[in-house]
Length: 103
Image (cartoon, rainbow, N blue to C red; front, top):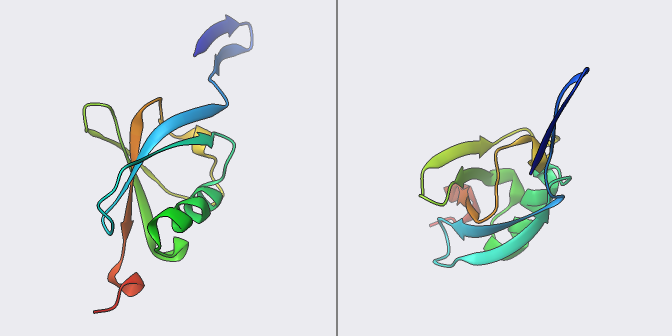
């Protein structure tokens, strides 16, 4: 990450890609993935849908840091991933509602 200051304010530059671990409340797995910070949350959910088997419409996403503390909840389907505090080796946890997995 690069932080610089100019007369117009502070500018923060981060790498365009971020490596994260992905987990789910449905499957007992951890996958390491690299995502572009320019992805919208809707696009990210679409990619995670293929991994988890749940539908993007019934998916919520939480971000945990490397110490497993909850950092953020990814909301707003048109918001970019880069707008959230998602750093290298953080974990994105997908939670699916029962609607995806009827009894």
